[in-house]
Length: 210
Image (tube, rainbow, N blue to C red):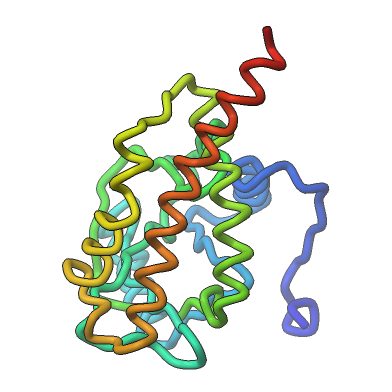
């Protein structure tokens, strides 16, 4: 489909999230890079805003809102959105390959935020989120283990209620009804899974290395 519209399409063996995006950025022929995943869509308003930033050279990187689509529709406008760093100058950016997941380009330059959004369909179903959380929590635990970060008994006990309160009340998922409640619970369990898998790593991998 991309080729039909004149795009250059490259295939490459999977290197991991950060390394794969660093490789993709090396293929870019222009200074500005727009980093989008396959489950993300931009709109004309965002495109116009990014064009203006390029034309007037207002910054070296740009953050804007991510609009999560969950169970077939967006969350309430009262629910706090996540802002992502997705548009930046190639010559001033790089990906830290020690980050196994939740990778983001590091940019040596001026960063600005614009009040625009892009749609994210990666949370469209509970099954999709569950699968992602399972993969990401394993990678995050492996990353922490490799960096020598220790698990916390206190965190294991308290992280579920604390993250739920943060997501449901402070990030205002309460305004998204049952969908917001479900998502807050899933976020809390994801946080718990990362810590539990880090504990598991110390119980298994550490013994293997002895």
